[in-house]
Image (cartoon, rainbow, N blue to C red; front, side, top):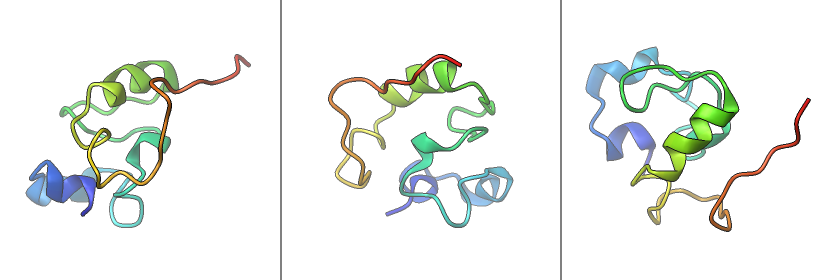
Length: 73
C-alpha cells in the first residue's frame, strides 16, 4: 500500500513528490504534502513523520529505531 492510498489523498496525490514512485518511503523525500502543507526541511519533516500513522504502519518498509537522525551540514 502506498502512502496516498493509506491517507486517502485522492487527486491531491498528483501534487506530491512521492507520487508515483515513492509512496512507500515518503519520509525520505523532501516536499511531501502529508498533512496538507509541503515540508521541505528534513528537521521539520522528521517531526511530522514520527507522528504519522503510515510511517509506523506495516506498509512503510524502512525501520527506524524511534528517531530519524541526520548530520548537520
